[in-house]
Length: 68
Image (cartoon, rainbow, N blue to C red; front, side, top):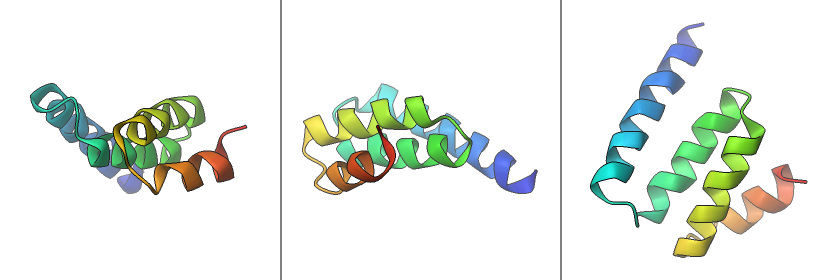
């Protein structure tokens, strides 16, 4: 439960960061990781796709490994 709370807080922070700068690929990438850890695979895949589109090179691997 403590980890879930940490991810929930991180998710709130990532959402705020995206509001401030919607073109930061690292925030989408990291938010995808938090969503995936919370069991939201679809949401994670959407975030990783956005990160990939914005130029995050690691996002391709996460999509390939986790999004099918």
